[in-house]
Amino acid sequence: MDHVFCMLAAEKTRKPAKMHRLVARVSDEDRGIIAQAAAITGQTVSGFVLAQARKAAMKTFETHARNLYSSANVPDDLSLLASGVTPAREAEAGGMTEVPQA
Image (cartoon, rainbow, N blue to C red; front, side):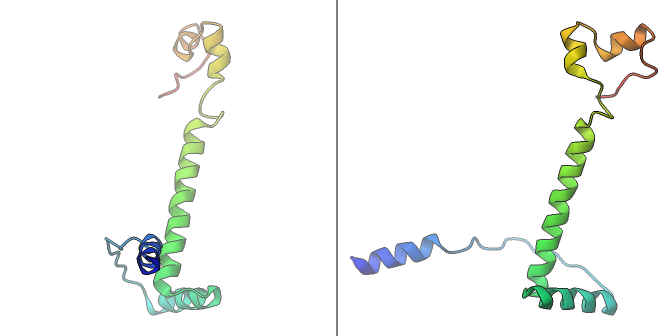
């Protein structure tokens, strides 16, 4: 019985299989810089590149979302909607110089 429990516990801790491969051609200089950075952080080159690519992707998502919903791009919709004025109506009345695009 203990043997079965150990086997089940080991199966639960396995990492999911890698399913895709990314390939990049880099210069000798870039390869050296990346290899040094990976060594400093105690990672393999592949692990380092994947970790940094993921960080950059997440930052890109956050920046994109922030830009979409920033107050600079969208007027104070809550106060406008509460008063029954939409950005399009305000623009028609001459209150805005351009209609925000959704």
